[in-house]
Length: 567
Image 1 (cartoon, rainbow, N blue to C red):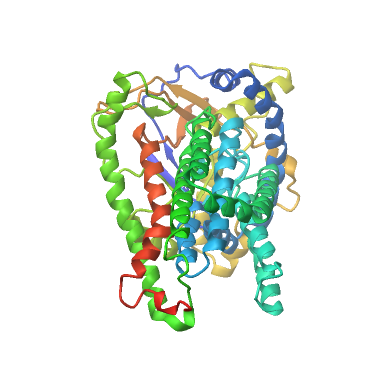
Image 2 (cartoon, rainbow, N blue to C red; image 1 turned 90 degrees about the vertical axis):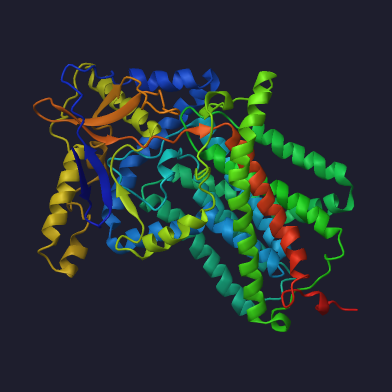
């Protein structure tokens, strides 16, 4: 049985899945045992200690976040913050940044790549290091357009780091004495930068994706990264350009070492994948700019008025086409060829296995249409993205309940805390009087049905409005709800079947029946060759964007700007 619900804002809540194979006598994992032991086993002692010191902050702020969200919720804000969150994603910047190099802003573009790559890498580094969950749902509703966001840890916020780093770097560049922009335009752009950063940061709180500590630390990291790049980036770039390839090679080696020492997460978190993608872009960028800066094309100017809008738009379309063509050709070729090399390396005992990645000796082939990353969409995904944004829900989804293993373990751990505080390990006082996640889903379904008989204005005013006397402490009662059920490991009979136990969060009614209402989002099987594939593909994207494509312009009639050189 599979029933789905819609929340009052039109978003889809997790489907309620009733599993008939779960009987009353099935063993329920003791709250606190599985959750606490999981991180104690998965993390080194010193990392586990630091995680336990930081975890109370996540629990403390959750009721206040839920109160804030419930107070402000509206369909308009849901759509606005879900859509604008894309302006802080890797996908947005990866598609937009190359345009700066093609339109005469290579220096500014390189600075942005540096700060964004550093932000994504180091926030992902800290996320995997601490393995801290996002604020609990329930009581929070998670509003997002990203299918992979729920699988990531929460601390710190990469969106906040990206937004603040871009805003701070942009403001510093605007205030540079050599900036030719008019004061009135400069002030308007500064206000836009402030609005952009505040909107992204507050949106992460509103959407239930991050807590106060997440966005504060993420924002501080973004600001520090931008300050470092603005004051020390240009001198360092000049140093690399003035020296031979040994200095460049040393920098690339540092990037490879940072990838290698990236912490192993306790759960299957895709943060490492994003870090590898941006590390690849950095490698390609540095190689490309070093070579391009020494070539005869380095002094080719860009003049919008002289080239005309048609030529500039054609340059952009041509560049985007080249990048997507490279990705569509390189990715399947590497996924097809690298497993043979990796199996050979394994026979020499030189493999460097990483947790949650399947070694090449355990599979025969990889699906060529496999989505190996969430940084850039495939060409086949573009129509779906446009349709999703234009659809009734504006591409957003609203979910209530644990969505990842980190969520499930935190639900268990929080209930264990309640048990210990109540002084009775074998009981859960007040559980039946509290709203479970299933009750919340049913209530949202009933409210959605009732909306069909009311006017649009009445529906809008009634969406997600809590009782007038509702306080943060009322939301704290919803934390840790549900029964966690762990079923034995099963395989699906296929070649690449997973043998991991399936973790469920079920709700318990007054009769004591267990229902599985939300199966956790299980990450797909990841293959060892994906790391090198991603590194090569995104290294190629960076190299193509800053060297190959600008050179190709000069050989295509109507796109080149070599004739604008001053003799």
